[in-house]
Image: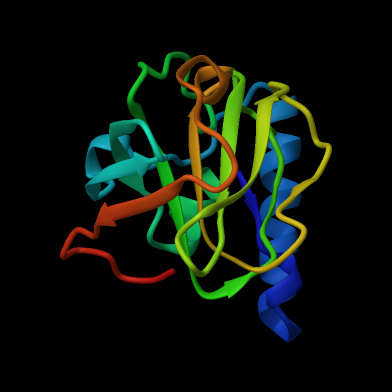
Length: 170
């Protein structure tokens, strides 16, 4: 789940904080939150290229604020070569956490030049610890925990993706 409070100000910040507080408290009481079926998210083809390898993924696109908050929460299985991309335009420092996320994830932070600048490997399920990009990024990609290492994906690899026509925000 993405934390977006650093860019939200005024009354909108109160709305976001209230929604997040409800989300955390509702999940703690066993209540369900309204989730959008991942089948309704736009999908895109994503390629990671290093000097010697090319990997292809199919990713859900978290193209709206509500989709970015939902992310991969409550997903119990993420096949290899699938994931989610969080476009960030304009580029900004991204902060994520693993609230209500059942599976470990690798987070690939993509710099404005299209290269991976940081990999947060095997993020711990259910952790509220903030995972930050540390510098402005244009996207964050979440894939199966441990997969980046298994494939040999490293900082400096180039990301490209075919953006779906339905992207509405970022």
